[in-house]
Amino acid sequence: MAKKKIGVLTSGGDAPGMNAAVRAVTRSAISKGFEVVGIRRGYNGLLHGDMIPLDVQAVSDIIQRGGTMIYTARCPEFKEWENVVKAKDICIEQGMAGIVVIGGDGSFRGAADLSKAGIPCVGLPGTIDNDIQCSEYTIGYDTAMNTVVDMIDKLRDTSHSHERCAVVEVMGRNAGHIAVNTGLACGATAVLVPEVEYDIDKVIARIREVRAAGKMQFIVVVAEGIGGTDEIAKRIQAETGIESRATVLGHVQRGGAPTVRDRVVASEMGYYAVELLEKGIGNRVVGLKDGKVYDVDIQEALSMKKPFNERLYRICNEINF
Ligand code: ADP
Ligand code: F6P
Image (cartoon, rainbow, N blue to C red; front, top):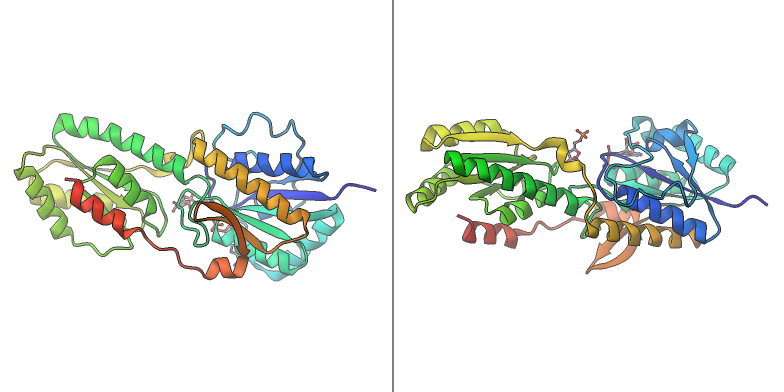
C-alpha cells in the first residue's frame, strides 16, 4: 500500500526560518513513515498540482538559508469555496493525510477552510511582523529585528558624522512590535507605532530638549503602519534646523540567514505540527505560549488579541535620549 503523504506549503510574505520549518516538517514526517511533498507557491500549488517530492536530501543545506525553497505567493482564488473543494479533491487523489501551512492569518483562514472540507491542516506562524495573535513569537521575527538593528547601527555612524537625524521606517504591517524592540535596542530618541497615539510636536520638542543637553545625532524609528516617513523627516528638519534623512528599510528586512532563535523555533514547531497530523488532528495553529509550544483551534486563534508591549515603549521614552 502506498504511504500516506504530508504536504507542506509557505504562503503570504516570506520570513527567515521558513526553510528550517519545511526541513523540520519533512524530516519528522519521513521518520514517522510518511512521504512528503512540497506544495509550491502557497495555495496556488495545491490548486494547480504544482508539487515536488521532498526527501531527506531535498531539505539538506537549507536550515541556514533565508527565504523559502518551495516559494511563496498569494492566491486570491483560494478564498472561493469551490476552489477549496477542488483542492480537497486533489489532496484525496494524492493520498494526502494532512498539510502544514506556514504563513500568517490569511494563510490560516485557508487552512481552516481546507480542514473544514476534510483535509487536516496545521498552521505555523511565519512572518517577520510577530502579529499572530495566538503566538508570542513568529518565525522570522528575531532575524528581521537583528537585520533592522544592524542597518540602524550603520545609519547611526553616518548620522553621527553629519550630526543629522535619521528617520527610519521599519516593517510590521499594522503592528509596531518590530519598531518598539529595535527602537529600544538602537537607542532611538523617538519611536512611532500605530498602537500608541503620538504627537509630532512632542517628538520635535524632545529632539530639541536632548540637543540642548548636548546630543548631536538622532534616530527616530517609524513603524510602517504610521508611514509618512519622508514628511516626518522634512518636518523635523524644518522645525529644529537639524538636517534629517528618511530611510525606508523595506524588503531587506525579510532576507538573510535565520538566527538561532528562528531555526530552533521553526524546528520545534515543525516537529509539533507533524505530531498533530500523525494523530489525524487538523484545524489547529501551533504557537508559543509562556515560552512553550502549544496548539489552538484556528477559529479561536484568529479571534484572539495580541497585546502590545507598552512597558517597552515607556522604557524607550525614559532611557533613550
Ligand atoms: P498572510 O498569511 O501572511 O496573512 P495573506 O493575507 O496575503 O497573507 O494570505 C495568504 C493567502 O492565504 C492568500 O493569498 C489566500 O490564498 C489565503 N487566504 C487569505 N485569506 C483567506 C480567506 N479568508 N479564506 C481562504 N483563504 C484565504
Ligand atoms: O508581513 C510581512 C510584510 O513584510 C509586512 O511587514 C509588509 O507590510 C508586507 O509584508 C509587505 O508585503 P509585500 O512583500 O507584498 O510587499
